Image 1 (spheres, one colour):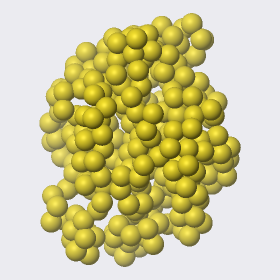
Image 2: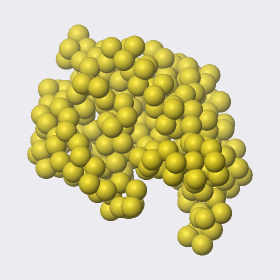
Image 3: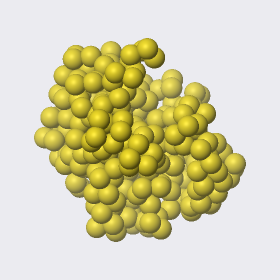
Length: 283
């Protein structure tokens, strides 16, 4: 019987792929805490003896169904179409989680949840998956999960529950990684050069920062029901990926009933106006 050994909300900001001197230059002499935080997340994954990383990818947008990347292996080179100066010709080569993907599809059929298991090895990859694979994977299998842009909160929670049941039916020891930011509005192009620092004072608005900090406090207390109930208010600050990455992950570990307390593994930072953090939930 499989098990979800832990879950986390994890920043994938492309700046983590830059050399440290450039990151420090961007931060006015200070490095982002996200890189050191990823080292802490990797240690936690290894301590949990996870054999599979399930990554909810906020840049992989689907429309008419939930989709999982069910190929047995992924290999290639990736250049970001968004930021080709930051991520270019990045080689990747890792094992997929085909058995788990197939189990998710079976559970979805039983529950009448619209899920496609996309088994093509040529499925387009996105950096919310690849950046985490780069920093966090040792020899684990990887299953990437898309974010359906037409889904409502209950759809995301339902998809998470499908994934949780599928993991239980296999021999998987999975860590769930919700790969995405919090409030997600960038500064206008003309103003970006003045807001490259990591300090939370650069988050796009004081109201967005206050809402992010409220969510962080609730996460630390394990108050996931309250976070879910704040969804309508939070949408005003455009959480990345409709907040689907978090909702699917939490749906897999109990949804509204989940009481897993969060351990913050980075500072709460700005990335060009967006709110970013690593938050690990002990199970």
